[in-house]
Length: 221
Image (cartoon, rainbow, N blue to C red):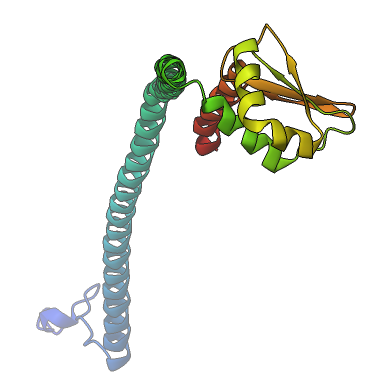
């Protein structure tokens, strides 16, 4: 009866749960704290990884857009340069053609002006043949360095006119008047042992023509 009356908690094979000691409670708290720390760390790592991935993706997208913009602008510039190159060459050719045309027009205008001037000069000379006297006086004043034996060559009709009005001046300068039937009226030539001075109408027109045609080209440079 003694064994039967033993309290249930004291029956053989059964032991009452021992109360948890303070050391065990401290261990459980540390374990829970470590677990919590791992969870927080893992969560922070995942969030950081996701944030870094999104940031990198956004940065790469922005860099890709910028690179694409630069590549597009470069390609557009190259295409524009390739398209404009023939136009630039054509513009240069057009400019050269215009300059050539300008020179041609200028030369034609000079020829026309000289032709008109020559016609007017011929008419004026026919109306006033004594113009040759002014030409001879100008040559005498210039005293061209022609050496010894200077000779003045004139058209036959002009020779008579010069001898009539300028005989004294010719004698003082030591010039001798001679006839040159190939000369036109209004012109003359002066020759000497050291050279010649062409003051014929044809020679003077040629010099004037060369001077007028040279001036536009000098102005271009």
